[in-house]
Image (cartoon, rainbow, N blue to C red):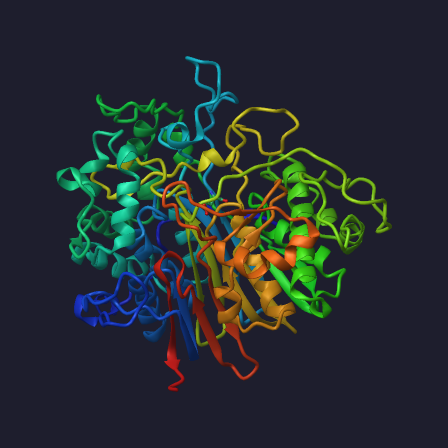
Length: 619
Ligand code: GLU
């Protein structure tokens, strides 16, 4: 059952520890340890890819954000309080990946009840959005995806992140919105030290940011990206957080901010010198006033004795991870050698992606056969399509959810391709508290830098999430543009239980590769005997029903020979803005039977993440 959450003003009484919650500049741990960017500069916060201990944990891509979440836990906040505080901090330090102007999906495990519940905080299309919104009227052809369509008002969806934070706190939190936003406001005000990743992401977006008269003021001061080692402050964002903390999220969705966002979308402040078209969108203030985050049930599959809970539509994450695992479960992959096990993993993924393309869209608009897609009988029939010795010709056709009996009906049939872009924008965080509650949260503004459009005086960028709709309208396509609809996502925040208790929580950015990253980490950990840190560090490959397997170079060098006899064609991964040959940037927490927490982030990808526990086990 789904219910929508009516936004209300913050109902929690103010706590008197607000000032104490703040993490001052000097309270942040600075030091020499850490991946790439910290290097020799002692002012960078320490990055800790893995921590083991007790009493609660936070894992995110950013050391300042993780530290803020940990402080909340130490001061008695619960997992939801810490998750919102961490997410708000990521809005400061990762403004090109996530923030108030975006959306995301929040999965919560309640230790007291054993329930897993989710919040769909996906951006929505404005009510006036026409089905041909992505077609250039001057040419009659679709706008070029990047940089044209992504740099626009037309790709901006009504943000869902503010409503997600407020909803999460109302449902499960103990902090007021003001308390949860306070540390991030302080961080925005005192600033963070620019590292190479931030500078490079800014430079990668220079042309897009310069397409507007406004965005360069904040992100390209003096015409250049902030220097590595300089302090980047965002006073406008600090002010916005403080204002929203005082007034509640109605102050975002109604009134001057909503008017400002709608006006920017309809009339982007296009620079007279840009060569980009910057097409305008269709958002009205009423679209913001009507936005609702949706509290809904998760997807669920059983996988080798574990219960895997994920995100139901509007995301395809839960169903596609679930179907891949269900198909894989038909095989004894643990008994196979690397080549055969990975061949089955890749083929299962391709079949699940074919079904994703055929059936997945916003369930408020299209009839998504979720029960069929996640049934073991359907998976058994899909598994028959896998030839144990040879990779199927891609793309493979979708299965028929109206007619299946678990019996084999031949090998995979050819289908049509359903390509998605990949990038490593977006961000993910994992939190657990001393009571055993768990939050897995993926949030985004879509591309690195979103639409590139800053909300002047407010300090955050607007998303380009509507580019996740199919560009060209087809009445049969479940992901076609429709007014008020949420574009299909791949975000896959996932919580895995064993006998009703948390076993693993994980998620990642990476566009449609998110699904493969989450599935592959579970596969590595459950089937291939890797520890959780090993399962995350291991090289990744993703087969999304495309001719080639998108794979990290390390995956190709490590497993290319073993996979060659099966006929898989490997394509080295690359990101269109950063050229990083990396898939995803996962965070996770593993739960040991004795209460030990293993908090894990990336050791290398995206410069390494930061995973912290409240009471570390000293080596
Ligand atoms: N827009 C993507 C999605 O919802 C997430 C962006 C990314 O991770 O690249 O699937």
